Image 1: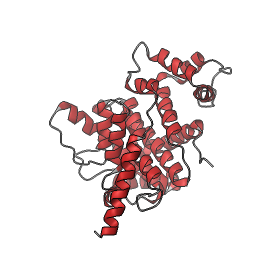
Image 2 (image 1 turned 30 degrees about the vertical axis):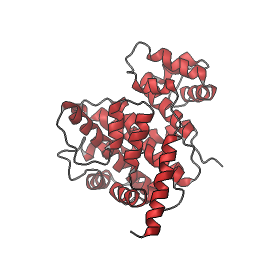
Image 3 (image 1 turned 60 degrees about the vertical axis):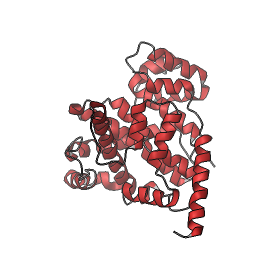
Image 4 (image 1 turned 45 degrees about the horizontal axis):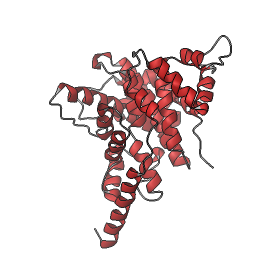
Length: 307
């Protein structure tokens, strides 16, 4: 490595360290909701409190509750009715996505694609966890981990506007290639940076660990906790692969089911896994629903390029 490239790398590391220090905190209410079980007696009240404190979130909450997907008999005009209509399970993911979207506003198509990818991985992770009952993974936890798995890339995008690290979601050859570029240019990966951000935000330890290890395909499992985390990591990885396919080839959902299943089997199942979280057949059968649901969430959040 030349002196010039070494200096460039050191400058990038300094910029990233400053970015970590300046990283906005998630609102306390959101951090609490992400840590709180939806079965908690206080969950409903905390959701209402958050909505009452944020008029813009309330407006989006009412919009989602009155959408065609929710199909209310009459127009919903109150926070309580909106929360009841949407349901605690869906609203937890909506709150988190909205809060993070206020911190990282897309400025160009690459950042917009990163947002779409994050939502797709969240929805796909939730669907995979729901179908993989033998893994005993909470679909809501899978959604949160999927949504936040690439949070480190948002930080890198903000601090390195040019250069090889800015790889659009539609240009990925593989996640492994992305990590190689990040290590070469920055000296660290978006996974490590994202894990640090999660800890800074005070998120549950398991979520921070999954973000840190979401590109670790040979997970060392010595304890029951590590075994559980490894299963969750594989769910995120499978969802990550599926989203890359959907981003690169949008018309792939029009392929015959057998062809789509073969592609998923080839590109969404890592060779180091003993068994995939779910079969390629199941993922193929759910792919269209995952795409449609993610698209509705992106539309509902109003994520767009900040002109």
